Image (cartoon, rainbow, N blue to C red; front, side, top):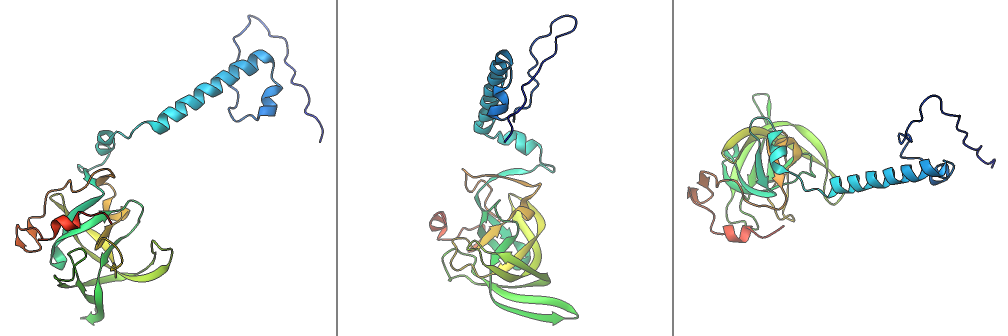
Length: 235
């Protein structure tokens, strides 16, 4: 391998200028050693200063208020788990995990029966809205939007039915897409993904249950499930 030619600097013209530090930060150590001592020392100081600024930016805590201000339509700060409602499906309260690592939202459903009604593809299914309990069962049906291949947390792919329904959380409602799957082995009956939250919710991973309780609980108007305290366990 041929040695690199020496770095030659011409004589300055006119008044002398200060050392130019606008050198590529990504220069290799060997390339730096070819610089004159004064420029090498000055540039090394600049590199150290830059590394310190980068470390400071990485360690700086996120300003939630600034992030919220950037969200249109008055986006809200919510915890990583919240109580939500699915009024179109007759689910008046269900605990959901707000998962920014998941793209799509999913709902625990079983006994799926797909059929056609007046040329419209419909699915009928059942839901256990109370976590770790089969005591309460809600029967629902919805129009089918289609099917989607989803990769599970275990790395396996499965085909799921996709429906559209209304989500209620923190006093607001909007339509979302839900995939139907059995979540018996999971701690949460519902998973809220990025598609449903984008532009509306900022997730605070250090907080839980920041939204108001839905107007109607599983046990009746304005009541909470008897097992609510048990639901507060982590997944």
